[in-house]
Image (cartoon, rainbow, N blue to C red; front, side, top):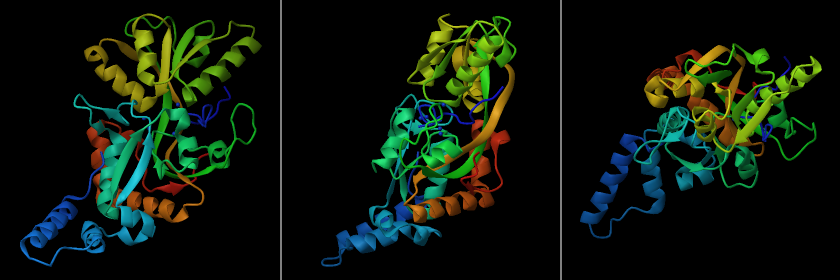
Length: 330
């Protein structure tokens, strides 16, 4: 089967691809800033200037000087993300953004001395938002692909905008899941001919389903009926209600869904994951300094063990990498 390699494709890989929908200041940085402010309040005429306060916020952050000065001055990196893709990024019961990506961003923030602020958006609009400078970067289980790097629409082969650079930080494949105890005879992608599958719009899962459907018809079998939704959660709801035969999403998401939905009684994974490819943090091509700072921070947390702690926490250690890479996707 020929298929594009992306989660999250760019609306055919504009989520083009299915790249993963928190972060906080370092504890020592917060304490330092609070202490400085408290001292200023107690001594007349000794209030800290904005520059001094920002300096305190980055104290103890070994990689702060790698950031662009504008980012250091703001103390914030704005992150575009589709925050509905558990366990990569999602809202907990209190409305807080949690998951693999926010935890990794929090660890990187300690290295860089800044706060990562996650802003919600639908997956297939994240690259556009990055181009429009609504975000400094996009971190959302987004697969690094050559098409995305070059701004190419994967379906038409035409350039649709400026490409992006990626800092690759995790490997993930794509899985199929069905209702538990009712796999409809589906053991892999070749068994989907004549069946109905639900996916998130703009993901690699949607791309794979389209490619497989074409293969079905070439083999004189019935096409696959594909129903695409704005979020993966909507696709899950449709399958749970019996409105489809199968669903597909990135392996970490599928595995988390199978484990947690209905207390583990709603779904089951069928077959092996396919199309393993790197997740990448997307950044504008004219922002090489920020890209390199993010890479340095990711390498630092891999080296100091914080990266492993995050992956172990979420049960996705099998997707770990030993170093961050720039534009390693194909």
